[in-house]
Length: 125
Image (cartoon, rainbow, N blue to C red; front, side, top):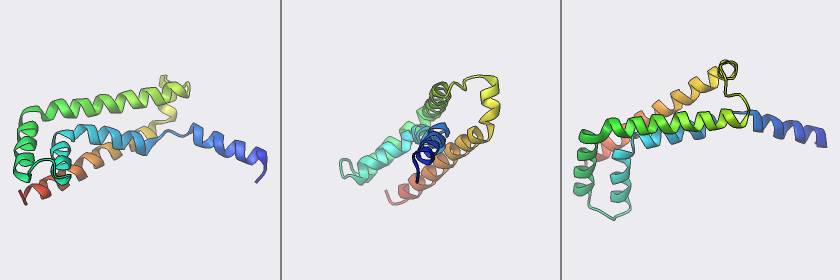
C-alpha cells in the first residue's frame, strides 16, 4: 500500500459519519431509565427486586424525559459530527440524509432491543 493509498483511506474514514456510535449512544441514553437499574442488578450492587422497582418507577414517571434526553444526545452528536466536516447546512443534510436515517434507525433499534431485554429480565425479578 502506497502513501497516497493510505492517505485516501484515512481521508475516506474521516469523511464518514460515525453512524453506529451516534445511534447506539442516542438509543442507550433513551432507555437509561431501565438499563441503569438492570446493570446495577447484574453487577450485584442492588437486588433484582430493587432494580425492578427502580426501573418501573423511572419508566412510569420519567420515560419521556429519558427519551427526550436520548433525542438531544442524538441531535447533539449529529450536529457535532456534521460541524467537524463543515457540512452543517441544508446541503450537508441532503448529502448525508441516508446516513442520518441510518443513525435514527440504529437509535430506535437500540432502544427497542434494550427495552425487550430489560422487560425479559424483569420477568425473573
